[in-house]
Structure formats: C-alpha cells, structure tokens
Amino acid sequence: MKKRSCRRTDFEQEQHERAIRVRKMTDAQLCEYLDSLAAGQGQAGPTKEEIVQEFLYELGIRREDGIRVSDQTIRKMKTLARCRGFLPEAEGEE
Image 1 (cartoon, rainbow, N blue to C red):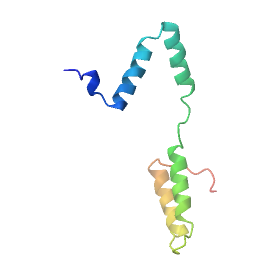
Image 2: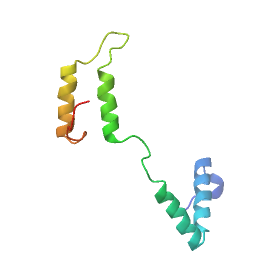
Image 3: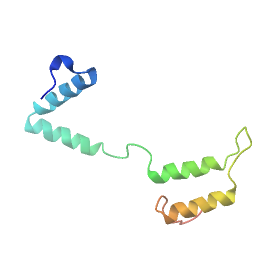
Image 4: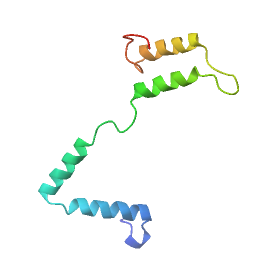
C-alpha cells in the first residue's frame, strides 16, 4: 500500500518532486538531461590508486607522537598492493 502524501518525510517529498519533474520532461528534454549526466560522469572523487598511494605516503610521516611506519614496511605494503591489484604495476618508483 502506498504511503499517504501527508506522511512523507522532507527527504521523501523532495525525491517525489524530483521524480515528477523527470517524468514530465519531453523526449528532447530527457535526451538533453541524460547527455548532461553522461558528460559530467568523469571522476567523482579520487581513484582507488590515489587513495592507496596517499595512505601509504601518510604512514611514512612522523607525527607529533613520534610513531611512524618504517620505509621497509611501506615497501612491503606497496608490493602487496600491486600484487592484489590496488596499485598499478611499478613502472618506476617515486
């Protein structure tokens, strides 16, 4: 059974309004809307490789408490990340 309009939350009401706007679009408007979505579909955020690289870099920085991960351990972690597909194969070490 459908939910009554007066019982919808603000989020549900906003979703409903957006859905109505899309349903009322003409074919030309829909095509334009879908093309704009496809064009803006580039990287929404950092890639998996960038995240792993940044994480490994941050592990090697000595913080105020004096704790850091050794360079040898970071090299081992990079090797494991490459073997498991988290990082691309090494072309040249940075």
